[in-house]
Image 1 (cartoon, rainbow over the protein chains, first blue to last red):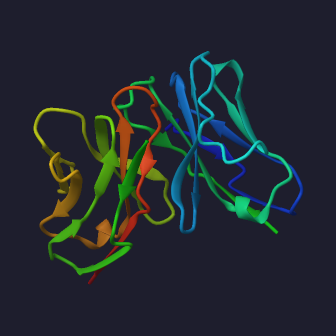
Image 2: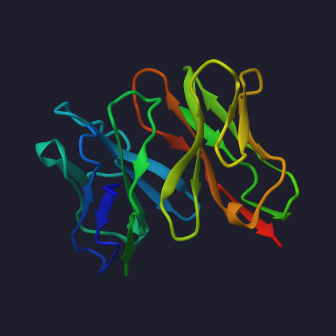
Length: 115
Length: 114
């Protein structure tokens, strides 16, 4: 089935390097979300895209984090100058539209390890 | 903003015993309520949700949750658990208006013991 896919599944990087994480949402879903799952912090919202509207960036922890969504489909989360505290599983989710009662479908995540 | 509290980080329970996973939330606005489940080596998936209407909602695999507005709770229950219910369970809320993102609790790891 065509669920949400993410790549890479695992990424190990050195402190200070930049990383890019990719998310392919379910075809036709207009809403796309990024979350971070880290030990002791649970799941934290990072950023939300809806159609062609300006994204809601209110969850991004610092200006080292950015994301874009090209053509209303694929999204890339970029972390610049990675720090050890960025180590976490980064989850992408999509939903059919921006109604907050809709189910969000999650991808398998990218496990990021910063050495 | 909203916040969700899951007080029990781990719940071990014997097979065929009942279980309750507790969830309390705090919000200045009306919310929708969700339980998501993450089975071992799998992604998060929706278990059940409360949007409106009957405060008791049920999943296809025997779980149920009841929205209690006065206690701001949405506890998850199952009368008889199976080995296959072993997973991590996340309670979440989203605002009915405004921001659409989910606010999650820290999760409860349910381990069913044979």
